[in-house]
Amino acid sequence: MTDPRLESLLQDCPGLRLKTDAADLEHYGRDWTRRWTPAPLAIALPASVEEVQAVLRWCSAQGVAVVPSGGRTGLSGGAVAANGELVLSLERMNKPLTFNAVDRTLTVQAGMALEAVHNAALEHGLIYPVDFAARGSCSIGGNIATNAGGIRVIRYGNTREWIAGLKVVTVNGELLELNKGLIKNSSGYDFRQLLIASEGTLGVIVEATLKLTDPPPASNVMLLALPSFEVLMEVFAAFRERLQLQAFEFFTDRALEHVLAHGAQAPFAEVHPFYVVTEFAAGDEVQEAAAMAAFEACMEQGWVSDGVVSQSDAQAAQLWRLREGITEAVARYKPYKNDVSVRISSMPAFLARTQALIGEAYPHFDVVWFGHIGDGNLHINVLKPDGTGDAEFLQQCEHVTKLLAQVLKDFDGSISAEHGIGLVKKGYLDSTRGPAEIALMKAVKRTFDPQGLLNPGKVFDL
Ligand code: 2HG
Ligand code: ZN
Image 1 (cartoon, rainbow, N blue to C red):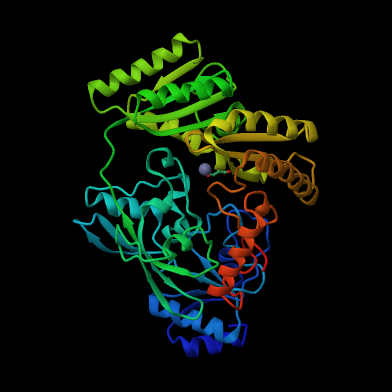
Image 2 (spheres, helix red, strand yellow; image 1 turned 90 degrees about the vertical axis):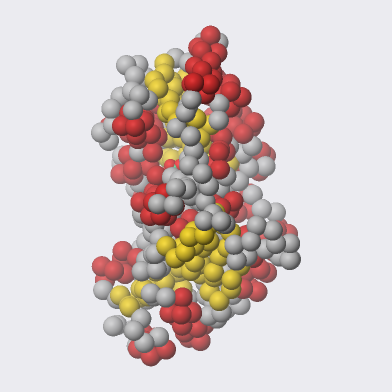
């Protein structure tokens, strides 16, 4: 116990588990961005809502800043503790609480991993449909705090659609019970929705009541090789018209090259500029026939250069790995990440313009494009070239993001589609939100957190 303030924390919250070892401070003080040097005061690991309340009461009384912490898989620095904050880890609060078969809801503690939520829903014959590659490590509380999207948004929407209720502890330790599982509730401001995507700046989410739904029908996974982004959009339209799409994801030849170098198997003999992984209902003959018709229509137009349909679950997983493995495959190049969205219809023009801008400014950059076509969400990972120093690379990438931010303004797009603003994108918030909106966001923040103790410096500076 290095800091004398921690004695008083333990007096106010007897039995609270605290970690202060250097290795723990390092581990809990960072997220997947790996850019900031972790320097938290300590790690508090409460086991109950009451303990969370006691910790936050103490933080308010002592004026200690606090960083709410889940799986720390975020890519925007939202869970970074680099300035002596107390990290409030929800990892011990990781249990399912109640299932209601009539309401089709599952109430869980916020520290539960997304994959554990999936499994708990399946035990009741239902699904929680939000899904993405970090499922095994990310926590549901973090998903809610960032309004996580992922690979099934095209079919099911973002996390926001699936939250029927939230329990949130305010900075002075009060417990808010928001919406309590209701479907209809027109009783004024919806603080549940305000807390979703607030990135830990307004309160600490401790429990969530999640909506569940029926499992999808049997599905097929198809990988397509395509000659251009314009063609890709045509194929998307043709598939969406004929099929019930569960996912429609794309990546480029550069992305595939990195995934193959990381151990995946090449799907086709030739290299192609663009690839799509799509999953669609194929549970019966009618759906199978529709899938065939969609594929043949695209072949007739000469749109598809090559294609493969999964014949087994194992092959489906192999095809998915080509898309879901990208983040891990490029991680060793310390990529600078952009996660932007525009209207679906604007994607080709947006991509062409930004590709040209980046290519002109930094022709030597290895830029890996991939993302969620059905959501207008593009991931643009810039990989650090060999021989470029960290500081120089960061400066160049910030310049790229400035260029992107300008284009996003022109396209009415968003600088963060699904990863959040955190620290990484706070300098660019005004590319997406107007001055009056940002002023109101700050006023809301001050109302919830007058001392500015909850995740300070994230999303914006006050
Ligand atoms: C994905 O879609 C995630 O795979 C991660 O949002 C994106 O690594 C990234 O940039
Ligand atoms: Zn994504």
